[in-house]
Length: 106
Length: 126
Image (cartoon, rainbow over all chains, first blue to last red; front, side, top):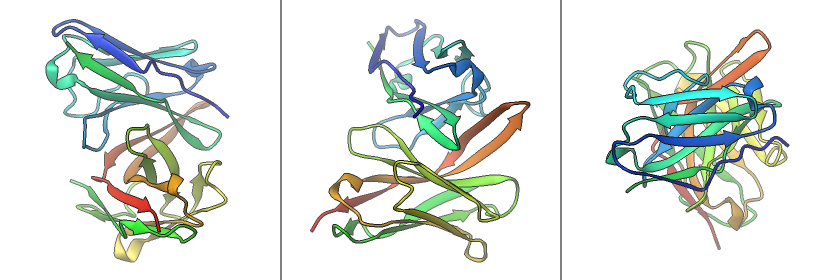
């Protein structure tokens, strides 16, 4: 079965750029979306179709996808961005999630 | 604005069927080209997609759960449901329902979930 791999954790200083990767075989041939989940809350869609932002999501969130890796980039990271982030793609009629990355804003 | 709300027993005995309902409000469950999904998350762990249903009744299930899962929709009541048979402690999790959007662009297909319920905790224990 298809697998998406994310680093368990990423740390970033406030105001700096955070990059969270999601890897999978020929992932660039698929569309990827990203969800943010804060403790005790439901996931929130922050990026869809590789690089599109839903209404209400700040411009500091952006996405890219090429080759075997998709990347969620958060520019000018704020303390409120500390959360778990999950990538998701579609393969063989199944939605697949990455294992999640805990973003810590130090 | 569409809202989703999960409901159902918080405690299920092992070997019984786990049954949940997701009620859709603020919009019609049968309007637009939306899918309706179930996702779960064991405590401290990641998200696992369970399956989805289209308002036509067509379904897709996670292969790892397919033998035990049934998702159905009742458009007259604006809700869709999850049945997971032969429950075990491994099915203990927060269960979310979500609205999905899908389309194909050339040979590429995308599916993402843009509206989520608040989740409901289900514990499988005797």
